[in-house]
Length: 280
Ligand code: AMP
Ligand code: FE
Ligand code: FE
Ligand code: ZN
Image (tube, rainbow, N blue to C red; front, top):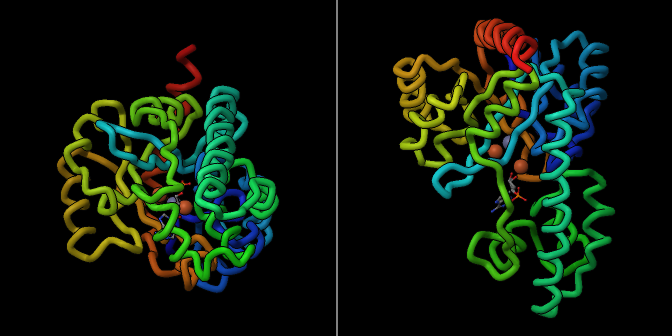
C-alpha cells in the first residue's frame, strides 16, 4: 500500500480538477493521498468526496508559503481541520496578498509593453490563491509568450523584470497555525531549498516531519533527509508534487510512499489535535 502526500489541483496552480486527480490516483493504485494546494484548503471537500467514491483514503492538507532567514520555504500541513477559523483567516490574508501580487506583476508587464490584463489572469486562475504559473499560462494564452518556460525565463523568475516577491509568514508561524488547526507540520522538498541550516530552528519551533521522498530528490538526497529525520526524530513523508499537466507530464505515481508513514503521521496528528483542543 502506497500514498502520495503532495498534490496540487486547479484550486492552486495545478491543472487537474479534484476528480481528474483522484482518477489518476486510482490508475496508479494509490491507497491514500493528500491534497496540498498552495495557501488554500478550498479543494479539500471535493477531493474528499472523489476519494470516497474511489475507495482512496483522503488526508486534508495544504502547502503554506513561509520564510526563514530570508529563504522561501514551503510547509506542508496534514490532517488539518479545514474549517478552523484561525487557519481560514490567516490563509485568507495570504490569498489577498497573492491577488494583489498578480495585479503588481501585470502592471510591471504593462510597463514593459506586454499588454496582459489582470482580469485575464484571474479568469484563467479561477481560484483564491493565484500565482506566477497562472500569469505564465495567461501570457501563453494571449500569444505573448511561446511557452511557460519562456514566460518564467523572460519575466517571472526571481531577478526578472515582472517578478514580485510575496509577503510570507515565518516558518514558526506556519507551524503554529497548522498545529492550532490540529495538524502536523512537515518541511516540503528540502532538497530544492538547499537551506538545511534552518532545520534545527524549525525543529525547535515544533516541526513534525520532513519530506524525504520527492520527484526532484535524487536517491542520495532522499537518503540525506532520511538520516536527518532520524537525527531530529522527525516523521518521514513523500509525494510527487504533481501539478497536473502544467509542468510537462503528470508526476502523480512517480513517488510512492509506503503506507506505514501515513499511520505514523496520523498518530502524531491525534496528539496535535488533543493538544490543540486543550490550549485556548
Ligand atoms: P508563486 O507561488 O506564485 O511564486 O509560484 C511558484 C510556483 O511556480 C511553484 O509552485 C511552481 O509550481 C511554479 N514555478 C516556479 N518556477 C517555475 C519555472 N521556472 N517554470 C515553471 N514553473 C515554475
Ligand atoms: Fe506550485
Ligand atoms: Fe512547494
Ligand atoms: Zn507543491
